[in-house]
Image (cartoon, rainbow, N blue to C red):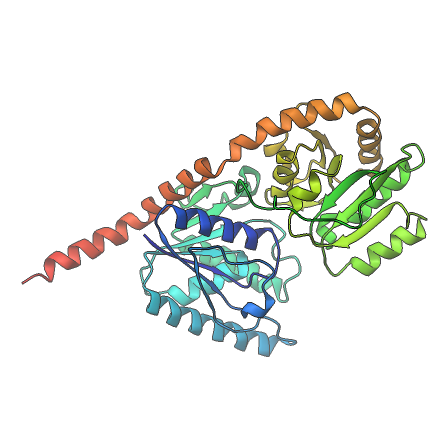
Length: 383
């Protein structure tokens, strides 16, 4: 099967990483996979995996004003339509709401199957003209061949679609990704570490994690906090750390290339997000043998963690509850070990083989009508 996968960029973020993981998985199963991005390769934070082709259309997303934004989106529609016509894929898979909408508009009239993927219900919260984008989503998603969400909870937000148009396919954790050797000079050999990881943006709730750690810092000597990632709130978070007198206990080291390598040198993982589509970082931490504590946010953590068995769930946004969970785990090594062991067993539910089978089954299903049309056309055109 020839598959075209479309994203705005590869500039970082869970959805973009999931796209590349899925592209690599499908390529290893003998599919021909091409990744298209609207942005140039200069913005890439991730490498395109071996066996996957890549084309950067070079149509920027930043506009500065509504008119320029409209013109840029029209250019994206035209460029994408031309590239898909050139590639002639059996199916197109697009990633995240705005790209899904642009892809639907670009492919009108082609009868080519289009699968839209959704990774987070907050995808449009920071979008200029978000009211327009939301209206377009409501209008155009009914005309998608299939809409795929990464969790059952997220799928509930799309129950207004016909049931046969909606699928749930969880993200998966590649076996070797993020586990190569790497040194981390910001680690101290004498400290224990609570670690959080993600974009330094409001929805990740890192200010709450810092506040929770501040509540336990005195009662947990020898424990430090790491917040790994980059984003627009770096200065604000650094200022919060300084104002709480935690400069020697909390570090913001930026991105790392191999998260699981880092996690193996830490002691506890904390997820403080207000919203997640799935929460793949939880699987990364669990696969590295870390016990995990997470806000019970929409939508993924409760589909990964069995509360009190493979991790700890606390009410979303409840800083006192999060601090109590951190203190309990920091002071109970046996509990950390028990949760870590059960967490490792959980990871197998999201294996590449299981998720790859689901993707292939869905793609075969959506491509069957198109395949039948091609076969009929071939027969009728024979002399």
